[in-house]
Length: 375
Image (tube, rainbow, N blue to C red; front, side, top):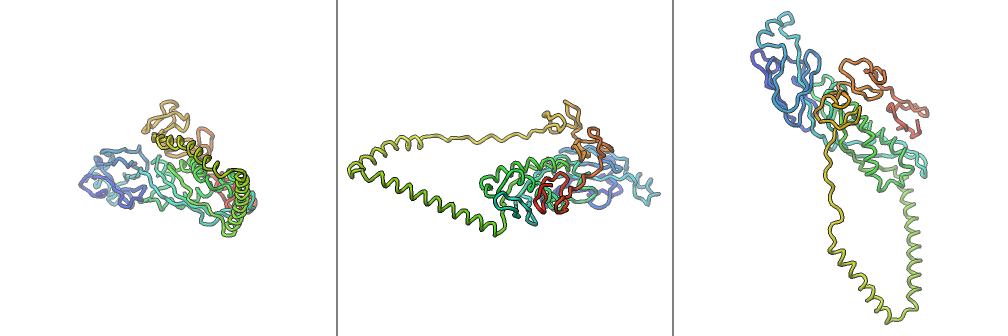
């Protein structure tokens, strides 16, 4: 893409040929000498961030942009002779793919412990899919991408999978007392788990658009116990059915043969209006209109424009360089302490160790992934 030539200005653009690249740096290897007047073309599904002299500038939206650096063709090369012909004014462009990346898979590599109220301690496997989208390009680059030339979904899927499994274990322990109550609750569990994971993903500038639970399966011996319990329930239903049939037969004993035909005719006559009304009845419900995406300030929760850099109500910065790991407040690029809670800006949250088995879990985990006990 011509970022290291001597005479000509650069025309910088990027196309994702794989469909999996989230961030692509130009140049891919090392750093470049992007010149004054270079042209940067951004598509509708992309955002670009120029790093000049090691610092990030504001993101560039869709369109054609002229880049401003101190690298002048030929002159810069002559002035950089003391540095072996390499200009110290380094510049590179990070192209961020803002589309939704669908069908990423998550699942339990090892079964997670779950304390069932009826089946005691069991281990469960769970699998599903989720979709992600970059919502804060600068925060995403500074927190996860770093100086990598190419960053794709495979680089982040394994870590996000571990986060989802940990939160799934907590959410299941808080909302389900026994796996016998799981049927019919997959949508409810998926929606609740999605809301809980929003904060975890927001730490890295990512948005979790959808998350689905495909299956939650216990070990074979537990499945056999559930099947045995279902068979007992079937036998109970059969007994009830036989009793009902016997009662209906007793009611028909005193009826005469002629009266039966009259009763059937009356019953059909009563059913006709209901049948016709059902045929001519219109649709009972209309499809709901798609909800428009709403952007809210994380500080005051007021609705703000999508491309706002500061909240018009409280002045809170929307262009996120880093976030406080303790209270999630957006911080300036060179902040050392959080202005809200005083927590060090670069300090990472410590993992929480289970007092029962000693396994390390995420910092705000409630249940242990290894033994299922409450931490």
